[in-house]
Image (tube, rainbow, N blue to C red; front, side, top):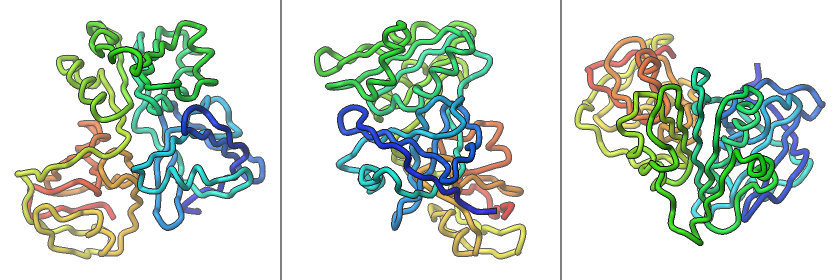
Length: 312
């Protein structure tokens, strides 16, 4: 089974200030696998590796996937590469993953986006509309709105509300969210300061009722519970000694394990590994408490026990 899938850039459109929207299809016209709203796609950037971008098209469209990417001056090279792609270009991608899902049990959904952070919500909106549940999308932006063509139908329907923060102060996120009530699910994707404000506004909400997706990995300070340990692969028995703070992902690869990675900061879910024995120190932003009982993110995980056995 191939590690990556091959896609062709079927269409390239300007989609707001500094933003390009790519429509990706199977080169032979085959249907693409179904995606979940909130999923992202890891595009393989030559010489740089995987870069994750939220899928922003309607998940019901089975013949194409869409991403909208803003050209970032301080990027790691991925956005510049995307902006250099022309129609007909061939790209490789891993299968989409969803670490920012809709909550199926919720009866009201409040989504807050900062600029290009609107992209995952553009995939969620048509799904929520078909479900007939209550939802609203607040888009905070400076200057022209991102992805205007996709946003306009929802603005006209009263579902999306744009807040131009260059013309007025940024609205209070707690006021946009309102008080927590049973059945409410909130989501936020945007720059770090917005995510911090969102986390503060929902600090006293029940666990799991406020979900965040990061643009870039947040800084990770050293965890005082981490200690030197032995990492062991269950399949081969290969072992390595790691000092507290050493990178587990790098150690696994040196032992011959094939582990994918993209963000390498605990926010994308690419390097998820099942652990069998030991006491991992989890520092990622994607695994649920239940999932952490069996899995870890190798790019940021540490260990609080003498030994860690992984299912590789």
